[in-house]
Length: 162
Image 1 (tube, rainbow, N blue to C red):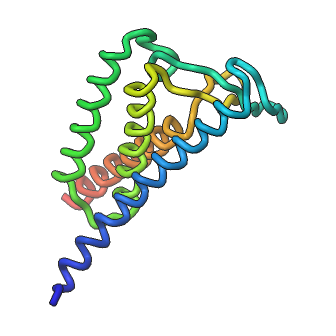
Image 2 (image 1 turned 90 degrees about the horizontal axis):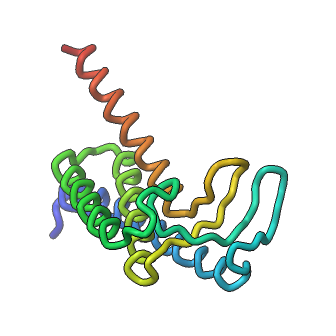
């Protein structure tokens, strides 16, 4: 019979896996829909400062390292390795931290799939003057923001306690 501790560990890992898979699936499905509906470099819908567009990015965030696909693939794999190492070393009971790591890993995998498969990522969310982005980019940004906030506040609490 499974011990309560084993069930709790499974639960913690389960929330990480679900958030990771959810991001990858949402990212890949939305990119596929955009490629079917919106002509390349076209705009589908504009609402105030928000637009649905169809762009391709051979670089990383903000188009940095454009055309260096192999470098970005290797950097993504190294980044994934570091995040997973961090996750295993800093295993925490905090559900939001586990979900946040899942968001980052899912986002990295989503963009990595595109880079390996196509040599570029599809960006389709355009907000004002900000460069277009996708679900994977959003997941990485949200996940990293929560992780950094968690690390800052955990350090502050530790300093306040000691």
